[in-house]
Length: 351
Image 1: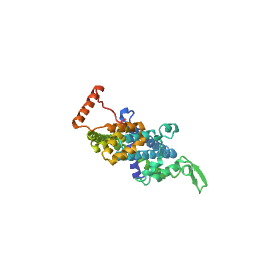
Image 2: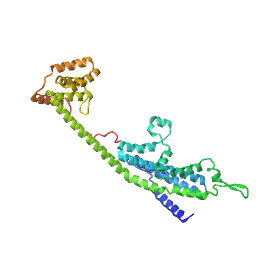
Image 3: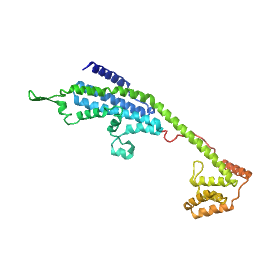
């Protein structure tokens, strides 16, 4: 073993000791799925690294490679999770961010579970390893070497357990052959990945809450913007309604168009839409006539007859009449509705 390899191995043992002590025996449910996933990954990394070292030290090269490959796959999983979180931070929502952890914790190939939750279908680890190769160009070839060692093929059998002496013309067997020195360098390189694991876990632990707060704030801003738009739309609807009752064709067309499609501020009502559009059309609005003719096929003949009768008998209001009309509506609502209680509700996606 070279001095450089000794230093690398000491570093692996130091990091493994820190990660072992870092593990928690228990977490409150309020910690969230992200904390749970980090802890599961931490336990797996410690187990796989320890298994790699113990098996190597006892001369069990095959099981050391099996553990090393499991460690490598776990690192690829963690690296890909970290990458996905960064993407969610840039463009995702809070619900999508939480799904990242849920889907990875629940990832499975079990058909019964997938029937209920198809989004839980696990992704082949090679997908993550191939993506990781963009940052670590050697990743795929290193994984292939370990896989060959783990499989019952030439590398996993003859190259691992057999030594051929051509001079003595003998074949000898042992837990590992003369290629152990090369194998050690591969094993050491893989276990050294726990340095990267520690850094990613540190980053995730400190950034997860920050990202959650950022996405909550982003969502609040969107909801606030939506609330402002809805308020503006409602105010415009009220003004259009006022103009419509006063006999303005533009206001009547706006009322009819809004009622023909429905909006946040007003429910869809084809009869009333036809009524207002007919009034606007009678005052020369070609757009209103086209819109009225477009919704007519969706109405019954009785609805059309009623709307036409209302339009024929309708007369515009004066400003005073409209204000009185509005006041009568308000008084009616006050008498017929109970007290309004405003409570703080939850929003979809906050669970």
